[in-house]
Image (cartoon, rainbow, N blue to C red; front, side, top):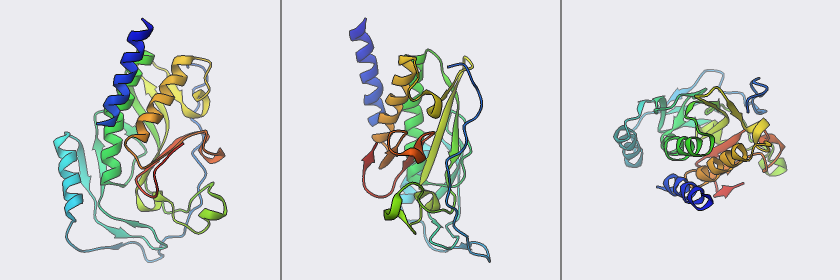
Length: 229
């Protein structure tokens, strides 16, 4: 039985590479807002790069419903290029705004090939909703110390998404803040499995063990240097 369970979990991780109790919503992560351009965003003109066109095609091939968004410069270093609005990826993810296509593509793969199989295998229930803390917001990096001072967050480029919890068909809500160190070993393992799965798809994956600013959510982005923590 143990060998069968190990094999099943290994398959979940391989695919990702190609409770109860208090139900209150956790507070969103802290932000360091940057003032956008007072006159409003500037729409940028130009041809869509080939890699962005390919990304759009990949989403369409995966039967993802989405709307391409215009490229915009919001000022203060917050520029959104090659972004989409995700409409339907098969599992509802609330709180999403503009998100750059490669990050959207990674999110779709993570939900379909990491989160959903892990929930069925470990928790015996399907995921019916994922609660996010959003994607685009013009702000600086939070919790990065002096090295991050004055730098625009990947959220300011619509290149990141924060995930707070997972709602299951049986009514449970698995919260990263509350359940990362849950007394239920299957819940703990589920969160660690989906965290490792994200590391295989996003450039940066941060969780509760990274720092206090990420105690209640996973942060995923497609910028900077590879980091899985």
